[in-house]
Image (cartoon, rainbow, N blue to C red; front, side, top):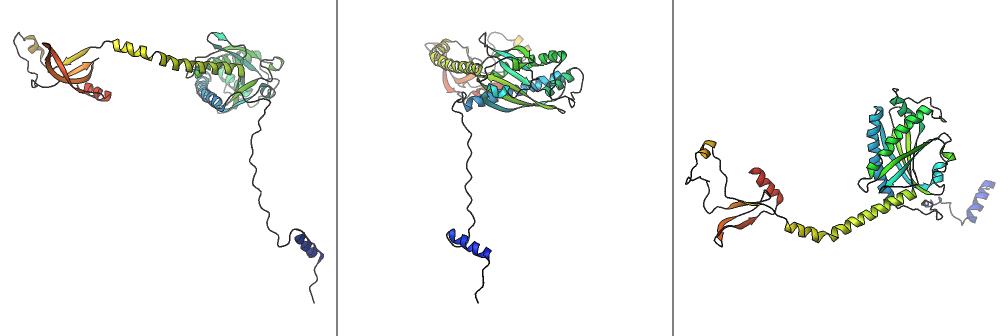
Length: 339
């Protein structure tokens, strides 16, 4: 007698037939879709990756300079590192600020001309309060500091002292590329009511992490597009002018070198005499140099040994015929040191 199938077995058999028959095979894993960063074509990037990498290197140097300065001011050890260098719109930065935020403005001075668009500094309240507490004799603990802390008048005075130092040192870090100077502007304790930079303007935001033993926070620097464009333009112009200058004046430089003069000294030999023997020397006396008459003598140019040669006569005048040239500067230095 045939076995009677249950309803569940009948349903499974029908589903298998609808799916093409045969046993059910494990579903194949779909390849994971590669994620790409969305690009906003309405606001294209203004600065290349190379430019942002240059800024990252510059502010790495700035973080080291700032670390040394803060350690000296507050007599405590801190560590500062660059967390990110990003290009964005200014409103992305300003929308993240709280109502109690305090900003510092600074102006770029390039070739004795001041840029109108300011550079902005923002420092988190816990870090600034901790440093100000240390400057006034405290230990820098800010555990009880509220999130909406508002600076007092005394706080703002100390805040300004610190920020003037931070601003003045930023120009030093650009010295490998260009000579810059940043001038302290003012401390703005209500930036939401003042339009410092256009909301849609492109900026580069540098975030730095500041860590003491008992508190951590961040310092952000906002570099507007207008300021960076002027700096990069001057860097490119300076590089081009240096290159063209070296090419245009190379012949003139070599002509000047050809006309320069150097002392050439021929040295027969060296010997040592007692002062008493030198005092008793008379006309006709002979000094033994301990060398053969056909030995080579040394020629010194500018105080260094360059050649050796043989003594001779040219046009009835004493002359030296060059026998060997010392091309290796290291060898010349060694010979001079040995003598």
